[in-house]
Image (cartoon, rainbow, N blue to C red; front, side, top):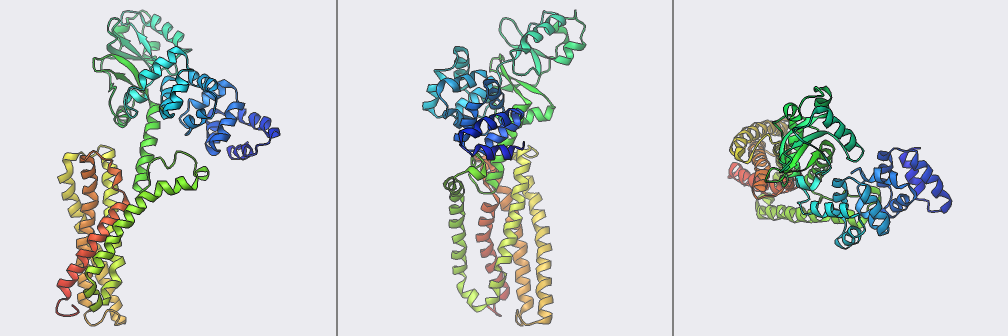
Amino acid sequence: MECEEIARDIHLHADETRGKVSENLLSLCPADIADVLNRVSVVEAATVTKLLPLETVVCVFDLPLVRRRAMILEQLDARQAARILNGLSADQRTTIVRAISPREQCRLLDSLEPGAKAEVERLLKYPPRSAGGIMTTEFVRLNPEISAATALGQVREAAAEKELIYACYVLDPASSILLGTLSLRDLIVANPEARVGDIMRRRVITADVLEDQERVAHKIAKYNLLAVPVLEKDGRVVGFVTVDDVIDVLVEEQTEDILRLGAVEPGALDQPYMTMPITTLVKKRATWLVILFLGEMLTATAMGFFEKEIARAVVLALFVPLIISSGGNSGSQASTLIIRALALREIKLLDWWKVMRRELSSGLSLGVILGAIGFLRIAVWSAFSDMYGPYWYLVATAVALSLVGIVMWGTISGAMLPFVLKRLGLDPATSSAPFVATLVDVTGLIIYFSVSFVVLRGTLL
């Protein structure tokens, strides 16, 4: 049965349908059940959670695919929510508890098993977007003096309790400082009598416990790793970040960037679009729209400043949409390219001058191309009509030169704004396409009418 059909059935609250819904859900894999929970309201998801066996619920809630896990658990009684949390892996348990309101946190933490409670409280001390905030603490610790055969036996024993075993970490028995790492393949192919300290890999890519989660994600991607050990400042291993955690981080970061690029507040996709209240949808979009609207009001102010020029040469008003859209488009292109390059670490803050020189050349070239097309368009039109008057060649020149200047200005503005925001400690994605377009619209009008005043002075002006 398709997830959409099951979600539709869940909307029916009649008691006679609940048994059928539960049966249909149990026929799905955990990822598909997560998809169903994402399609229904929080109250309906909580109701479904009560119908499923605890083992199934734990498997589903251990997947970050369920976007509103904290909200769903808040709908359950403390004992049932605690049973679910106790069965989750340490990192997912902490992520959920972190998203729960402070009042509910106290209620749930008191209901957790002592070991799970202590672990959550320890992990909550790390910043939410740090390596410590997303790490898993359940890993295999090996002594460098034991044999490969003994180590493999320890891995087998630990496999039943650990969430995932990507690698085994060889630690100093006294200090827990990381000495090296071993993959399961290393243990299987090694001589059973070989000493772990002799076959371990000593050059290990690690992450600091306070390192930003996005940096950890790029580190795993760069070195093609399955997991990265997380170290305290003294070198002790406290956990590891897995590749599946990294995927979640990248999806989260990219979602926020895409929302910001569209001038929408992050968090707008915390729940399905169709179940999101209209008030929430409006709230997430209104703030930036108001800011952009106030910015665009300056466009009217700029046009009012050149009211006399427009009155004397009405033909200039015909090209205002063309002028401002070209500048906004070029700025949006440049901003998008630079934001992507910064996100992929292709460029750094210190590269701003190199970027400016490149964008200056690009903007000039693009402006000349658009200016030539604009001039040609007016020239061709004037050959068949007198729409632009006897001084059409001056109008065409003004439009062409304005396009060169505005496209260059838009390109440079769009390229430099992400650098400025990053230097101020803000997200470069905040320099969204609508924001850049608004900025260039206002300044573009000033450039256009200033150039027109110089070119047409003594004729139309």
